[in-house]
Image (cartoon, rainbow, N blue to C red; front, side, top):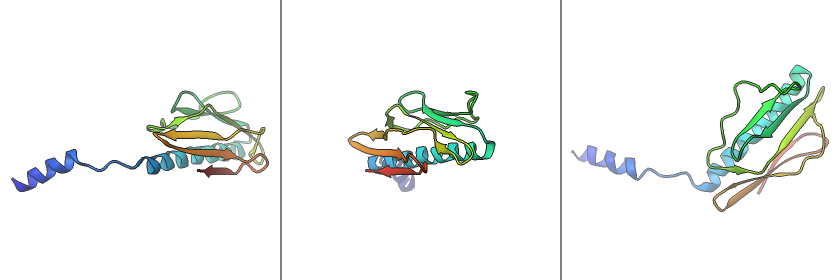
Length: 125
């Protein structure tokens, strides 16, 4: 009986991830998907683009606009400003100069940037 009571209390009192940790995890995931887009560009020797579809969804497409399957899962609880990053072969350099992208969750925010020349993905508070 005591174990059942403890189980019920733990079920309803389960700790929630603090917003800064969840935001950081989701930002890292987006940064990894940008790096994956760069790797696809180098491996397939064709332009690839990653762009925002909706507030928390984005996709990766090849040079013909065909989505890469499987598409990335939506960012959980995070709002993302509109963005689009294209990379050109053979070295997967950015196809242009792109403004930083702001990710927000509650009162927390992070900025993700892709450097102009090297395509390095940076996360900044």
